[in-house]
Length: 330
Image (tube, one colour):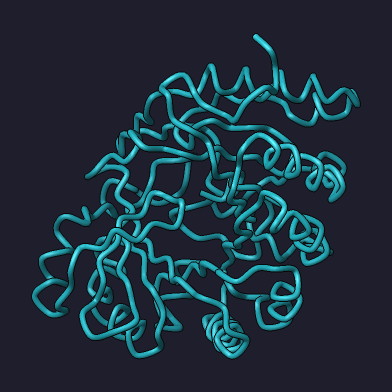
């Protein structure tokens, strides 16, 4: 094989055009479906430098990646996150078509302008409830007021915003119609997400799981909507809400497996390339990068393509991996 000679295509014939890139595994929240209450994070010395993140991004773009999403943990807790976004943003119009961000919104108000200047135009914001007490319970230590302030500032700057809401049975599932109504009023999009079995947590995922197949008839009865062909590069399938600017996205890894057209891989903050969210297998890009030999990085990427599994094997009865969601940002 001639390494690095083509775009990235995995062993199932899927073209990889989207990378989710974690800036840090740290987070200011401890969401119950995502993390245990007491977490151990990577030593700061182990995470990639911004220069290394930019170099890996550039190489992915050279191999056909067109979208990069910055994630965490919470990416904005890392000092200099906006600087890193600016470094990657230089790839826009030079192969990279879009740079986006997923955040919990806590620090968005103070960083939104810098993110806009870096070239980011679209942001996903995790918001599972607008009720202050319920929000604090789910996140263990978050402030919904700060998140809503961040959303308002981002709206004023012109960002396209999608709210990510994890559906949790008996906790926030009753609030989903209200959340969609609020998104319509604010001109935001909403993506509903089924909880995923990643890492050992304190809560019982089985008791909290709710299938989006059960939620949709309730929403369709109240909100006229039509199926949309809109795609953003991720796994969501969209519905356009009639007579509004808002779309409803569904991310349903358990009730409606979406692996057949998977186009993405994930890089952790320490430079591990995960080919699938639901598998532990990974390739060490940091080691390859630090050899200083571009061919070694190409070899690592090609090796990864040869090992990307056809699909995840999620089972709510047991964690699919020991890795928590904060390591790869979902």
